[in-house]
Length: 160
Image 1: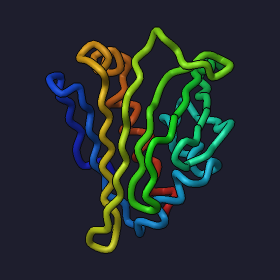
Image 2 (image 1 turned 45 degrees about the horizontal axis):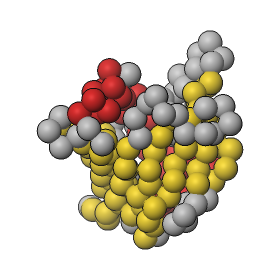
Image 3 (image 1 turned 180 degrees about the horizontal axis):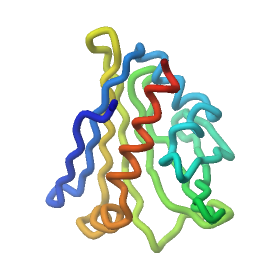
Image 4 (image 1 turned 90 degrees about the vertical axis):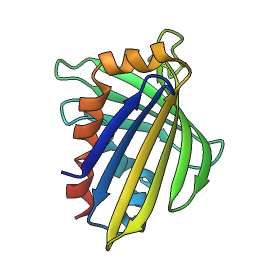
């Protein structure tokens, strides 16, 4: 299993995943840079993603929806803030309405993905920070730890 650690801190409003992949940084980066590859790992297997728009550049936007087992759709977006290819990107991640208008009812996070070469592979650290304790608790209650773990764990097979 690629995920080696999951931690959350209700005092700093953060959720952190650490994972190791048996592929070079450049290969793992491509998973995020290519919308067709991103679809295969963004969301747990039971909720596959469809990427609608994809611009992994500062000021760019990524929009997507995940389709649940009963056919229900869950919409989301990234507002890309910083990119240092192939090792780092930071984005605002939020839930959205069907037309990708940001939802005001669910929390928005500031997310950072950092990829580092280690032992012939890649260590990835995913840090997500919410505005407050309630925002973090909301996504924890929604199952974000389990869902994110199963999503991240799909990357190994894709980059093999």
